[in-house]
Length: 366
Image (tube, rainbow, N blue to C red; front, side, top):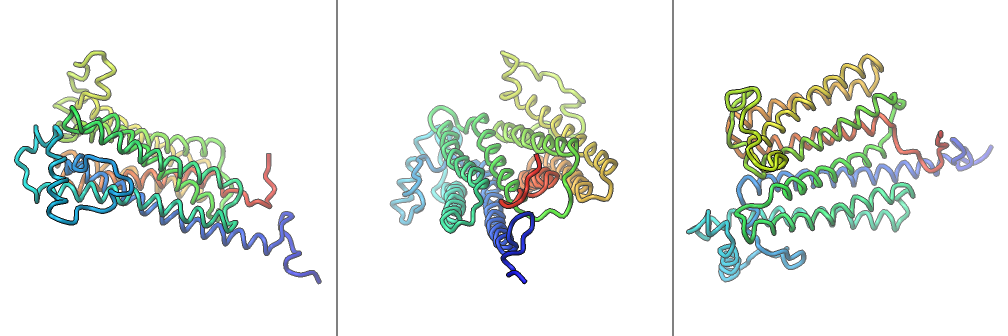
């Protein structure tokens, strides 16, 4: 009788396959930890925006900036830098040092979390790679996520810099880009983690896979539109639903010239487009749920489509409540956080329709 190592599955020794599955479980667990920190980072970033704290730290110090002010002299120095920018001079003139400390700590926490997630991703990645636990096909994906994280840090400072000279807040263009890239990194991490998980169900049909991918894209676009609304404080006005400014389609949506600027700079237009995007995502999730349950009844794909629709429904209700209550902090953060949950589940669902990544020894069908 041959040894256990000589028994093969698809041409691969069982012992080798078990080791690869254990490595996958370790890498997947690490990526889920990264997702938790990313989720916290986005929430703290949202609180930083909603409390108008994002310009409280006027310099980008990737290393030295880890240490907050430790003495009264340090606090006075940091406060004096803030006094030089337009936000203080035009909006917060006369702010006390204690009030400054409150907004400072939000921005500091956001930056320290951003640095932390970089270490939580990079150091284990180096360890897993050095010990041979990263599959060859996985390396480009993980390095791509790491590169996006570095780019996100640069975009974050680029965003802050937009509010330090002439403006009293950051550019909504840059804020929306910063938020959307964070969401894309979250989705990419979820996709890789889900691809490393065991899949008990066969691949879904081509139509199901394509529409599941479309839902990921639609959700990302909706998050981008939400970033524009946040950047313009667009949720602070027109706080009725389903009517907006007393109408289904409000007027004065194209008062800026050229017309395209209204889609990025007119708060009324931006909020209307965000509402429209929500209706599209809702309709798409509903259609996907119905179609998958008809084409592939009783499958995991159909059950996930059902869960995804209910997540989208819950997010829509949270969004409406946030709007009509005029964007209280906790509801706004719930709305932003739940958007990530919807995106993460949509990304996991799409990867689930495709099945797990093939193990190195598996025979891949053309």
